[in-house]
Image 1 (cartoon, rainbow, N blue to C red):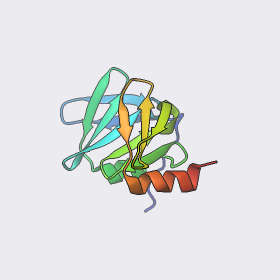
Image 2 (image 1 turned 135 degrees about the vertical axis):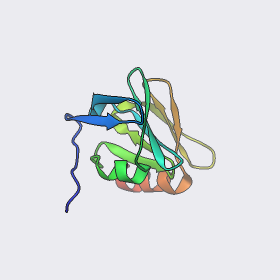
Image 3 (image 1 turned 90 degrees about the vertical axis):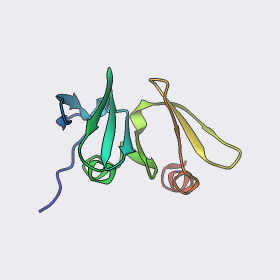
Image 4 (image 1 turned 30 degrees about the horizontal axis):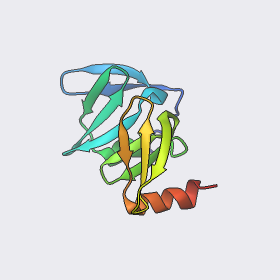
Length: 116
């Protein structure tokens, strides 16, 4: 059975252990691995979703979301600015002030697939 792909303008139900909420996909700024769960950053806070980061990533559009490292997926529409570290790793500053540091491998992949 094919997996459902959520587009940025859709509303999804995030299911945590004690809390459930509806959120627009475009409002998700960041997803972080937290053991075998995913910490989803949304306006007003975070929600721990009981599924692995890879499962969450597969449900999101790759045109909007990019895997920054083994433990992090970033929504590219939330990037305020970017910079390159001395070791050639990318750093994205998100609109909410969070910094996302890419792995060297993912930095190179981003440059190769998204560079202009």
